[in-house]
Image (cartoon, rainbow, N blue to C red; front, side, top):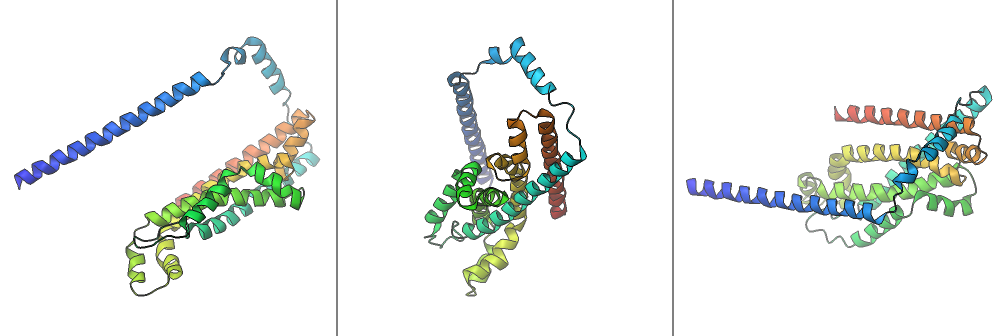
Length: 274
């Protein structure tokens, strides 16, 4: 028994040493990549930090103050804020539904699953998230016209690719016990997913969806630049006309919206963890 204990100890020490060695090699590779990035990019730090450049930046920033606070403009900004919030919320909801629908065929749900649809479903998810939201919005603007509708669909399509991949990984990493217990009784795969797998991954589904909602708030603001409505469209308009006070008010609206959504997401995650 003592010999077995010593052998187990030696094996554990060797495994730990191998893990440390792999970690060291990985960190060394990351360090080489960082150094190569600095070497390959033309970073003009001298021009960026030159006194003349700093003076011009200060002059530009001074034009933002004071922000525009007229009641009519604040009301317009509030309407755009609500529109941006609605775009991000609806786009994230549609993405979560579509991502969950694509996650099941994109996952190998048990050891004996042939997963014949996995390569095709993964290809679809890769295609959806590889195309940026701005490109999706530009394509959809051709058919849907200006406004929040193409922006919402653009958010939904891109985010579905992201969430679908995350949901598929969660399905594959879920404990197999409950699903196997139902499967041996002849229960169909869809019911097994609904009654065994989904309840186990539900906290991750909610967490991933809330996190992407936070990201989509920022993305929805950017999408307005291509005419998709909301705060982004106001930002593009006033910044293009060099109306800096109005631009600063719109930026403050973006900051307020992101802060509110971040706080709501944090409180929701804490509530779910109880």
